[in-house]
Every structure is written in structure tokens, then in C-alpha cells.
Picture 1 (spheres, rainbow over the protein chains, first blue to last red):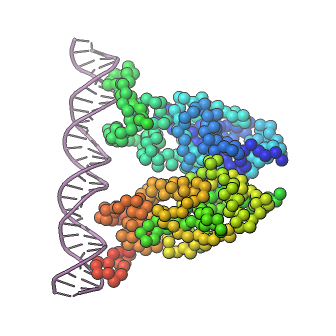
Picture 2 (picture 1 turned 90 degrees about the horizontal axis):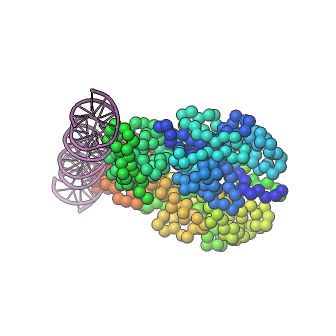
Picture 3 (picture 1 turned 180 degrees about the vertical axis):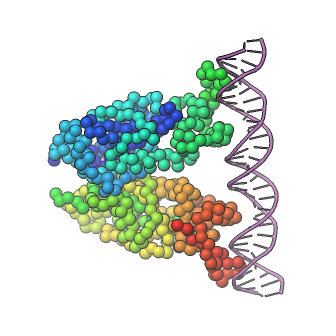
Length: 231
Length: 231
DNA sequence: CATTATTGTCTCAATTTGTAACAATAATAA
DNA sequence: TTATTATTGTTACAAATTGAGACAATAATG
């Protein structure tokens, strides 16, 4: 048997967050002719760093380089081993599961990452065996295969826990944004309304924002400043 | 080739924290005749949950069941692939690396966990190929193999980040403890001195402690209350 | 019975956060 | 030109939290 290009038994899955229309969305793949939905994931080449494999996958799906990426948990329960599901996916794409791709039916431990990207920068790209890669609001996810719903839940939980400590909310916005836009991102992540003045004071006091010129939108009120994150 | 009992390419390592003499310590293994030191780790059986594999390993090393255990990161860089080191370990124990154990020389991705245990409950047990499993103060660790020092550093960092949010400090103490003992644990983890009155107020306000009878130690001063964590 | 060390609690100051008020716009309507 | 409107940035004050010390209450000892 020829050695596979990839490490067996090890996969990754990525929860790719974007922000649009005031809500959090994530990228979900739908597989050809199966009605099965899954997180974008992939495998690790035998001589590739784990993190690099994930970045590679993200580039392929989003065409973005320089992505904010964070590993958050590795899922390794036996309950996620469902070869029948993988078999359905592969066969729907005419792949012979007896041959070269047999290893894909084995048990996998998956390392899960979440990514934060600027929604507008992305043109989702399906991969070879999926017919779509699309944004779904967190509140309206389709039924996902295996334990992918659990993975999403843990991702959002981790993101919430990290939000204050790492001040990562800005990664979901364009380089320059208004305070109001930033607040809406935080509200979407935390799932609660925040007080405008307190939020503004806190963000400014954190000393991580750079203030730029004002943004004139032709609205009948004071124009807000634009900000970007210092680095 | 006979199938191995374990998943190839996947390992776990555990940073087992204990508290004694006012400082944090972790369990380190020393391998026979090699002068090599490493974290206690192991492999995952082909039909075993990842988390169960780690618990199994902990039971073998510490003879404790019911351990506070938390997964914190999965290390998968190529730079941690050093077959020569593993070969030294195995050969020093008379294991033929050409045979049944060849898979141990492959590249491994390791899932890292930290555990918090009551120091006094433990009688460290070396495994088959190590001649000791001993407590080392965090500040006086021997040089560790591969990226194990990095793993330890990330463990303590994660523990610090989680300390307030999860109030896990008590897992390093016996069921009942004084406020002073608990404070010393927190100080050891955070690496800073805490103010006695503020600490006491905070812990009591958190409403997670149950107060028990006083502890009389024959000291010439007021006897402190004993506390335990509610569950 | 005074002394000593430590504990549990209280007090007051300092800081941080919650809440509202208010002046400063940038367009629009009169 | 001049009100009107909606939103923004900042300030002001109240409420809550935390910092820092004071102090009385022990449990032994001399």
C-alpha cells in the first residue's frame, strides 16, 4: 500500500467566523448530492506543521492570507467515529473507498480551530468534494454531521471567554471601523446588549485603538471617528 | 505487520500539578540510563476515547481516580519530531525499534492536558520504561525532551487564565483546608502575593465555599475555620 | 493573667463601572 | 438662513467593587 500524503487518524476542523447584517455567521460546506453539512476541515501532510495545515485549508476556502486563527480544543471521542457518514460523502463523489482513500474511513481525532475574518474579504470556495461553502448565521445552522455542532458551540464559548482578555473583536471588521460597528461585533459575540458609553470608555482606556479621520456617511448627525487596532 | 493496539501519530502528555512546601510542583519522569526527562504521557488505544486514555495514564502514574483534568493545547509542529530521542529511550530499555515498536519513532501530534491533584494523595509510579516519576518544583525543572518545556509553560499560562473563571485552585488541596492554605495555592499559581483580607472577601463572596469546624493546631493564636468547595 | 501571633470582620479611601446628561455636530426641513 | 433630528464624544455623578489598614476575638504560652 502506498503511503498516504497525509497523517492518518488526524484531522482538523475550522469554525470560520464572519460578521454581517449585525450577526455572527460561520462558513459551512454542503456536500454533493448528500444533503450533509459540515465544518470546513482537512488533513495534515506528513511533514507539515499542524497549524500550517489549517492555514493552508483556510486560504483555499477563503482566499485570505494573514488570518486570525486560534486552536481551541481537540475532539477525540469514539462517538465521533461514524465511517458510514464518511463513506456516503466519498461515494457521492465517485471515490472508491476500497482504494487509495480507504484511510478516510478510519477513526479520526480532530483538532478544532476558530478563525475571525472580515466578511467582505471572503469569496467562499468549495473544495473538490463539496458543492458549496456558504455563510450561515449561527442561529440558523443546518444540521451538521458528526459532532460538528458541539465543535461550533465550544468555539463560540471559547471566543466569548477570550474576547476581553485578547480584544480580538476587531478581526471581524475591516481595518478601519467606527466605535459603533465594534460594539455591534461585541454584542453579537456575547449575545447581550452593551451600554454605549461604557463600551466606548473601556475600549479607549484599553489603549489598543488608533483614531483616524471621521467617517462622513451623509447622515443627519455628527460623523463618527474611524478607528483601527494598534499592533 | 500486525496492527498496533494504539493509534499511530497521536500521543498525549500531561502536566500534573501538585502543591507542597508553598510551591507548585509537577510530576516528571526520568528514563532508565539516559538522563532524559519528560512529561508523563502515553498513547490512545484504537477504540478508546482520547480523554479516557489520559485518565487511564494518570491513574497508572498516581493511583488516583477522580482527577481534575483539563485539555489545553495540541502540539503539532514538525520541530517536535526527533526520532533519535525516542530511539534512545527505547533502546536504553532493550526495545527493538525495528520490530513491534517501530511506530513509536514516527512523527507524533500530542494533545496536552493539565491535572490538579492533592499532593499527599499521590505515590508516583514510574512506568515500564522509566526509572522514576518524581515531583519537581516548577522553578527547578530538569531539562526536558522535545518541546515539553513549552508544554509546561503553556499549561501554567492556561491555569492562570482559568484560575479566577473556574475557581479550580482547591483541587490542589485536601478536601478541607484553611483560607490561608487556599491563598498560598493562588499565590503559587499566579506568582504574586495577594492581600489577605481582599482574598478572603473575594472567596467568601464567590459563594463556592462551605465553612466547617475550626482547625485547632495548638498554635498560640485564633484557630482558623476549615473550608471545602461546594459542588 | 498579660503576651503573642493569627484570624475574621469592619471601615474608609481609591478605583472602577453604571447611568444619565449634555454639548457638538452633519445633514435635512422649514 | 435657521430650526430640527439623530448620533456622537465627553463629562458628571452615583453605585459598586477593590485596596489598605484598623481592630477585636481568639488559642496557646510565659
